[in-house]
Length: 566
Image 1 (cartoon, rainbow, N blue to C red):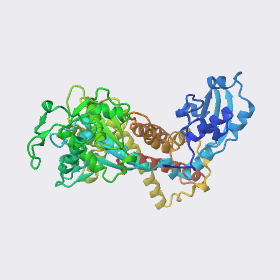
Image 2: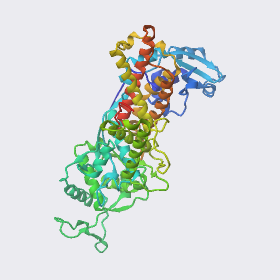
Image 3: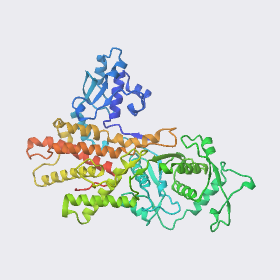
């Protein structure tokens, strides 16, 4: 079940309305043919949203000549179509200022003054997911399950760390879309791995040290022993396992072997490795299943989704675990988020060593730029957050199925001066904080009045090309960006794997920071305290206030707090 936001401007809604106008359809007729995700689920792409500063100087949307030639035999757009486009109205549709047939195709421009007013007078609608869903999601991270021993910062590989950070980010994104999210496994409260994850801003669930999984392991073993998919061999072929020789189990226990291929075939499960055959149930698998069983105790399991966020090296093992859980009677939908490896050419490095290196680089870069100022608790906190940002952006900015290569041996550390991922993003977020601190001091000194309500401002003063670019490319589409993770979960019959586009927020923030930095370096926001300049200054402050909130919201999905200075 989902609740759709209907009042704010949407790129998808505008593209859908433009498509219907171009084809001569009523919008509800277009909806019947095409999904409500607009162009993304159609075989034809009629309209293109512009994003470059160069193209946005003269158009916002374009239907190329190739499209026009397909729709109209002579390539001439009927005047009735142009009239429909000029009078477009509808829920979420941006106001149209003009349309014109040019040598490149049919171009449409938005009424920018009206768009600025609509967005900046109702910013909150653009900072949350456009669609609020209802459901339960369990995010399972196999890298954190105990094998021979509990993982530690020194044994956790960088590939496994990547899966943990992706799981953490997914949880934050899905919660923003209305899902109830929980994580598996719970970690011992005072363990080294739990403390390490907290250092990285990962709030993973913890449990008291006294809890054991023995009872649930026995429960899962009994379920598998009695399931329909157990292979029952002749007496002379029986195998015995010493894994059951523990207190209370009494001697040897018969080996339990499950035919996973039968599980796949009889339950019509798609996308799993066809080489999954018969699997002998080991203690490690029982412990994993016991944690899953515990995590779903209060779940309406039949309508829940379980995401196994695993590395490509562990995918086969996790498919086995998923099939064993299904064989034991679990009915939750299970999907695998498979993550590519992390490579460090020329050196092997644990997660603990990697974090230590990044912290040292961040401290060195800060001392080179700020000198003796870098001391005390405030700077310790800044360096910690900047280190976390560096780690998260390096490991999350790549499509999760692709490998990540870290140049950890290259000379030099981190810098705030170039678009280098997390540090660059945090630096520009801090610049906004500094701007508003300066403005508030000016108000206290009587230089500037308070920013009035948006309804009292004339937004035609926002003429600088960077201002429209920031609104059109970032503020308006942000809520739709937040929806993308959940859209893949809504697809049926998608197989075992699912691509949740976990790289999108990091890439969005880096791109935003480049465009904001360019604008901020070019435009003097806080002008002379002259009344005739206040309207433009106030309009710009509303725009940048909205961007500041966008930064905070997006960084929050990465569990990164904004920093007040840098």
